[in-house]
Length: 281
Image 1 (tube, rainbow, N blue to C red):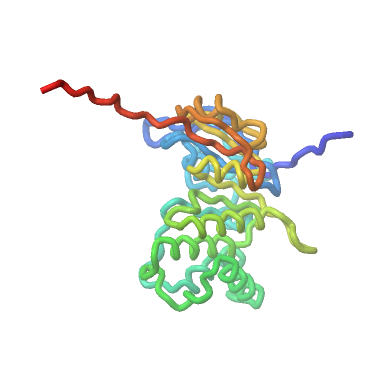
Image 2 (image 1 turned 180 degrees about the vertical axis):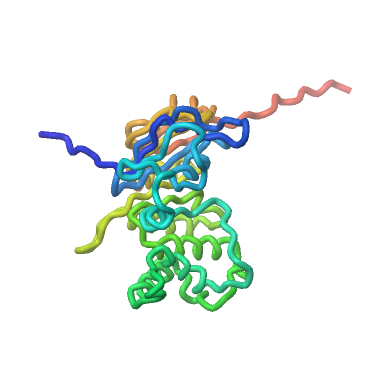
C-alpha cells in the first residue's frame, strides 16, 4: 500500500525570529499539514506564540521565510494573505464601545470590495460564526462589557467569519471554563473536518499550554523548547515520558486516555518537604 503524501500550503524555512537583539527562534523548519489540526506546545517563553505570529505575518523574520503556496509572506499583498490566513492573537484589543455583531462582521473585510461593501453571503457567514460560538444572544452588547470568556468566544467568532482556509489560534481557551474549553476545541476539530457535502476542511494551527488537551485534539503535534522543534508528529507517536521530561522537566507516566485513547500525561509524585523532627522537651 502506498502512503498518502501530505500536502502543505504553509511552511517555514530556516526561520529566525527576534525582538530587537534577543533571538527567540533560530533556524526553524516547520511544515503545517493541510486540512489538519496542528498544535504547538512547549514551556513558557519557548517561542510558540512568536512562531505563530510569524506564520500570520505579524512578525517579520530576521532570516529565513514563511511560505504560502511557495511564496514568501513578505512578498504577498496584505489583502491576499488576509483572505487565506486568519489569526487570533493571544490578547486582541477591540475598538472602544464596539458591539459583538460589529466586531464579528469585521472578519468579512478582506472579502469585500469598494463596489460591494456587504452581501447576503457576508450576513450568512457572520450569523453562522456567531451561532457556532454561542454568542448570538450577545449580538447587541458592547464587547468591553463582556466577561473574559465571552470576549474570547466573540474573537473566535470573528476569526471564523473571516472564512480563511488557514486559521491560527494563540491560546484560544484562555479565560474559558472547562466546559467552554471543550466546546472551543471541539469546534476546532469540526473546522478541520469536511463534515458535509461541499464543505472544505480548514488547516488549523493552535498554541496550547495544556499538553493533555493538545494530545487529545491534535492530528499533528509540535513540541518546542528554547526556540527549536524537539519533536513533531502524531501525538500517539511522540508523547512519551522522555519527551515530557526533556521539554517540560516533568517526571510523569503516559497512559491511554480512557475516553479517546490519546496519550494522557499523569504527573509524577509531587515534591514534599521532609518531615520535621521534634526535639524532646
